Amino acid sequence: MITLTYEFKLIPSQQQIAIIEDMLAVCRKVWNYALRERKDWINSRKCAVNCCSLHQEYIIPGDTPYPNYKIQATNLTKAKITNPELKRTNAQVLQQVLKNLEKAFSNMKEQGYGFPRFKNKYRMRSFVFPQFKSNPISNEYIKLPQIGLVRVRLSRPIPEGFKLKQVRVVRRASGYFAMLSLQSPVSVPDTPASGHPLGIDIGLDKFLATSDGELIERPKFLSQLQSELKLLQRRLKLKSKGSANRHKLNQKIARLHQKISDIRKDFHFKLAHHLCDQAGMIFVEDLDLKTWAKGMLGKHTLDAGFGQFFNILAWVCRKRGVYFGKVDYRYTSQICPNCGAHTGKKDLSERIHKCPECQYEINRDVAAAKVICHRGITAVGQIVA
Image 1 (cartoon, rainbow, N blue to C red):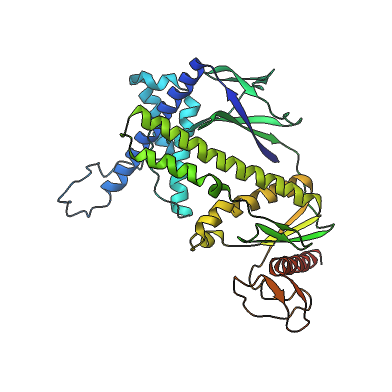
Image 2 (spheres, rainbow, N blue to C red):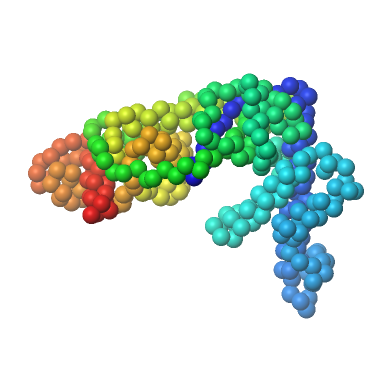
């Protein structure tokens, strides 16, 4: 089964914007109430049985079950009788909010994520319509429950053979967007390893170097707009909290941040397609990018967005039938790609690889990319064998 997510810009009317904002507000209240219910239950079980806290205590009966998704969804249905505000929003949308909260708690326990946070009116940015009886898109309009026909900018055609499963409405600094989740029952086999191999070494001096000798400069996405961003954030300190001017300035800062993010993602997509044009197999290092981001060059590492680039490159390779693989990252800059000799650790200032054994001389990033390519070819050969 193939799942695709297509993003389209919505052009709602003022009345529709008011409905979307009201739905976001109701979703936020449901999230905060359900989170408070779970948090109080957890806090009531922290104290020992034979003593109470001197500061405060959560008194909840001992036989009260943990408020999981099933219990909270049942209570949500009952609350609609006494709370007419909940009737204004689609029932399935509110159920999805509780499912997201359940998922947040499971991620906290299983994957070590942080404790879920309460949301203010700016943090609740999206809601989901989980199912549709028929295709809601027709003539550049999408029909959403309770919102009605909303004009949508169809920047690309929806592929044939795919069924619309759900729609997520997202509020961003530049407007409202619809994230369409499309599914097809077709099963696509894994891309076979064939064609011209290409190793890629990433870095901060150059964004990447390929085993074919190509060097890509690192665009400084944040640095180019940092002076403007710094000026706006200085002005923000002078605005009173809760004022209209502070809200307008916050929106301006958010639009600038989104502009930086959009430029970075556009560069990553174009570069991924450029690499796929010249290779049948692409190999990269299996790096721990979280550790990179904590170093003294963490700001520049995060600005480059290597993790996002690897995800986009893997997706583009799968879409275009190019084999994508990761190899061991250790000692790629300390091995000669020509003779395989270990040349020792190099300082960051050394930008030329020169082998003392065979006198092979080349750019150090290109040399590392060649080593990555050799490791990838060896790994593919072992899999095929």
